[in-house]
Image (cartoon, rainbow, N blue to C red; front, side, top):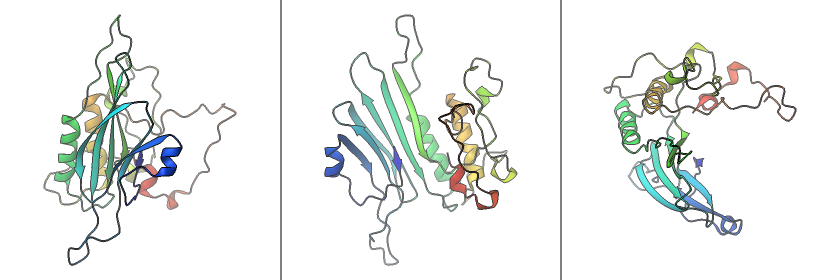
Length: 234
C-alpha cells in the first residue's frame, strides 16, 4: 500500500509488470489554478500493489477529492482462503479540512467495514479480514485502544509505544462538527473512536523486535525540536 504516490497516470508501468506486480491506482484530482483550469500538479493518491495472478480483486472508491482519498480493495483467492479487505486512506495534513468532512469520511469507513466472522471448531480462521492503512494525519501517541487498556483477553498484544510529549496527545473530546478546521489532535480522537468501535488496533510502534534481537538496530534518535507531525502520523 502506497500513499502520496503523485503518479500522473493510472495504469501499471511496464517495468512494474515485468517484475510481476500490478498497480491498482487511485489518482488525486488535478489541482486548479486561479482561473479554474487544471494544472499538472497533484498531491496524495493511494495505490495498492499486488503480485500478478494471485488474487481476484475488486475495487470500491469511497472518496476522491484533493483533500482526501479512500478506497477498499477486496482480495480473494479461492474457497478455502480468507477474503482480505484492504482500505487505503490519504488525508491531507491541511488543517483547513473541516471536522464535518472528516466525520463524514469515518461514517463511510464505518458503513464499509467488514466485521471478521467468528471462529468455529470447523474453521480456525475468519472468513474475511479487514485492514485499514494509509496516512490519517492523526496524533494518538500514548493513548491505548480501550479494549487493550487492561489486556484482558489480549495478553499477547504488546503495548504500543508513542510520543509522550503533551502536545502530541489526542484531545479529550470529540471535535464539534461546526469546526472549519481540524488539528491532528482532534483527528486523533476521531480515529481512536473509530478503532474502539470496531475493536481494532494500531500496528505502528507495537510489533517491534525485542531489544535483545541481534539483527535489530534502534533508529537514530532525532532531537524533539526537529520532529515533524509526519513522524507520528498513523
